[in-house]
Image (tube, rainbow over all chains, first blue to last red; front, top):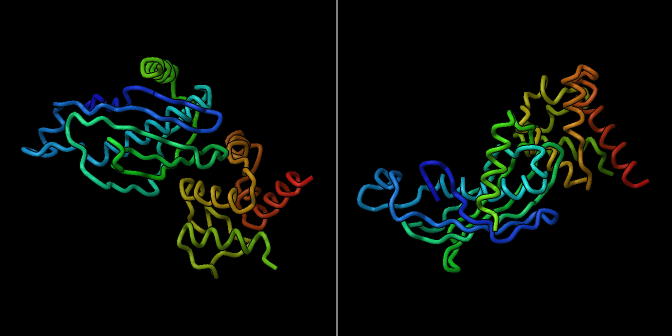
Amino acid sequence: MLLEYFQMIDTVEELDPDNGKIVARADVPKESPVFEGHFPGSPLVPGVLLIETMAQASGFMLLARLKFEKMPFLANVTTAKMRTFVEPSAILRVEAELEHDGSGFAKTTARISSDGKKICDSKLMFRIMPFPNETLKGNMLDRFSQISR
Amino acid sequence: MSTTFDAVAEIISETSDIPLEEITPEKNAFTDLGIDSLDFLDIAFAIDKKFGIKIPLEQWTEELNENNAEVDEYFVLSKLCDRIDEIIAAKDA
């Protein structure tokens, strides 16, 4: 994870776009500028970044499902539960599943665990829209290629 | 027997926190009830689930953007329910 660059997913370990499933790995860095403020003397990954991590796992699954013809944008965090703290150097397992494939939108459920322990879970909704430009599309394809096994 | 309108009105009321008595067939979901496009996605999701269909929102939006349709044609509730009934009938055919 590069928290300050919002690069949350390190590796896609399992991907089944037809059935709407993904399992990814995210390695929390030992050090990050984020930890200087959150919190001084007691570094923890901010909950909003855990939500972002679940959204990105969902997003890569949806991108693969859409064959990169359209882009999912996070539109609604329907629920999000932060069950325990995440400290530096934690190794996270991020799972997401398609709950509903609508017309122009999608709903997913996602969760993060570490060493078999539940960290957080959420229900998310995405708007499915055209890529705003080819640069973003190219960057998403490059990023997906980097994290795919 | 519950009609499509009854079911849709209940979904709108629950999703958008609008009193059920304010939701009548001649109302436009956006201009009369003040529902925005994000809230409407939740409504579409609930309708899809309730009726086992997929409301073609992308197609409708495209037609509206290309001025090939009026908002009322899809989003006045009586017409929305007619569309839903058509989609259900096509699915069951």
